[in-house]
Image (cartoon, helix red, strand yellow):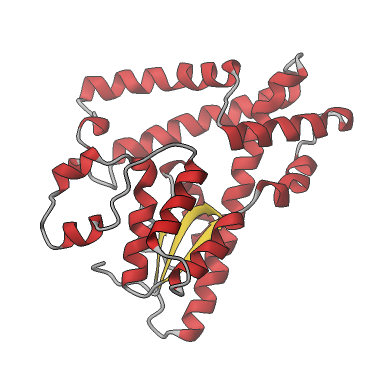
Length: 263
């Protein structure tokens, strides 16, 4: 609300979100219908207050009280604020079916007979969030040493997220640390796992990297179009910390000026 950007881009799948976002910005989709759509997409009941943004701006509710609201519904309030400042609203994540062929091409160490099965299994995991035990087990194993480090230095962002700096170096170190091991394990999984189903880790990794490339492309394309319409065209991008640094790196290499991508 303070920066009043010309556009707000969110890590949401273009299909089915962009059509709904266009209607919402044009006033053809009311808050109640948008809320209904978001709840259906999230797949669970969340208490979304249609007047929360207004209450917060008018100091009727303070930051501490925001802890009572589930983070899964946070982008509902971002959409409301974006509409309030008349910003374009963009869904920049790519539908998985649009990149599955490119992902399959990059799985050079997996036999052609097994690619379709693994690609479908990877897509199912990303949609349902039902992560196989061997994938979750590896993620937890890698995370534990860094979590102990966080405890030792007193880094507990989950305890009070509203007092935690959004550009926390420790959080960024944590992502770089975990991504290093994910990169190695994906390479190893693709080439040396004897059980074909366990090679799905490499598929998930490739999907993530391809999504990051496509999101960077979308941001670059939309920002270029925005600057042609507005001399002071600026965009706020909201995405998960896991993807932020790589997307920023791709954009900087393309010569895009970045002040910040919000996490």
